[in-house]
Length: 104
Image (cartoon, rainbow, N blue to C red):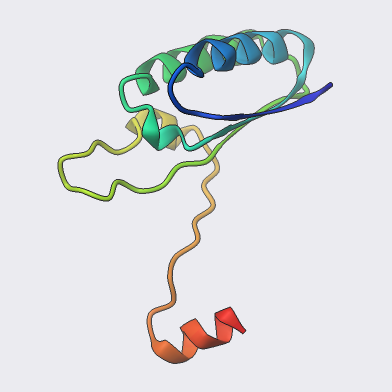
């Protein structure tokens, strides 16, 4: 009951916003996957996390997964959201040997 996983897509904005509010108040961990698909909603997420961060429960955690934009016309994550997060990246190996070793 203290962890919720939401795969972002059409119609998932309201459940995500409700979960952020609930867990910021009561404590819990929230995983928002594929937020890169929700470009128009990212400013709302950014603002809601700012508000939640002011009075958040000590056990509140929000994890976000996203892919880098595939095309140059797509936007990146908001800069202030990126600056307030701990980032973990998984970069592709540079050469064939490294790629085979990783696959093995």
